[in-house]
Amino acid sequence: MSTILSLNNISKRYSSVQALDGVSFDIPAGSVFGILGPNGSGKTTLLGIVTDVLKADAGTFTVMDETPSAAQRRKIGTLLETPNFYHYLSAYKNLQIVANIKQQSEADIPRVLELAGLTARQHSAFKTYSLGMKQRLAIASAMLGNPEVLILDEPANGLDPVGIAEVRTLIRQLAQAGKTIIMASHLLDEVEKVCTHVAILRKGKLLGSGPVNAVLSRDNFIEIGSADTQALAQLIRKHPAFAQVLPGQEGILQVTFTQAIDPAALNNWCAQQGLWLSHLQMSRKSLETAFLELTNN
Ligand SMILES: Nc1ncnc2c1ncn2[C@@H]1O[C@H](COP(=O)(O)OP(=O)(O)OP(=O)(O)O)[C@@H](O)[C@H]1O
Image 1 (cartoon, rainbow, N blue to C red):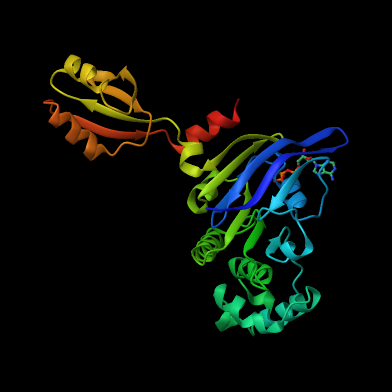
Image 2: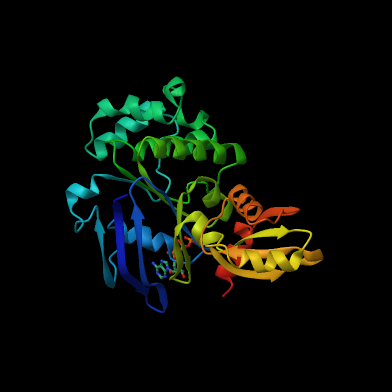
């Protein structure tokens, strides 16, 4: 997978506040990349820098392996704050205005309305829209010109649960169509549900980045048990991916491996070595637990 955006040691200070402190990570093409962190962790500042609204004090970034240029910026659609749509005008008319401001062809309007699932209501006044429809229209406006990359700041903010679900579906559809989505969020749940990758920020510092599963649930272990716990403990140490074994309750062993382990394959391997498992269970530290551990020092 190639890289859409690569950040190298980005720092930014506002008088007494170090909003970003040497942040580096890569965003793979085709990912739904969540920038996750509590309020004030520097997410909006980071998005501001990569969209050229703000200037970093130090550090560099590349877009599609090149120093950012005007041509590349056109490949990025951004939605950093809710656009001021005209309440009495229809979705279509509002998009005409946006297209004219952004100097983009009005011919693209039907396509983005269709993407956002708003074709049937395109001639209704904006004020008659639900919260979810309003946000979908905002995303549609960012998609004018068919950019490869879409940057969204807190796309679920202020929405009701129905609206959140609608926006989530739209983001998934855009990702399926091959777009890279970069979104800031302070909601772990949101990131877990739509993102493939994540970078976690706290007080301007990067705590970790990579595929959601790798960053947020590193402590996967498997619980195993058999009639002869001693023999099992000895055997499991010989497994090619063995990392650690800890005694659990009632003769159950908690085993961690150096790589992802398929439970069926593990069961099969034990049987081949002459030991039958009476207990086998995957145990994954919840994303929530892992996230809290990461963010609370
Ligand atoms: N223009 C500014 N002047 C001074 N301090 C600022 C300015 N903009 C942001 N900050 C501070 O920089 C830090 C990072 O802010 P930023 O908005 O990037 O965080 P965030 O993670 O996006 O938070 P939120 O979700 O609340 O917007 C915060 O402490 C904030 O108060």
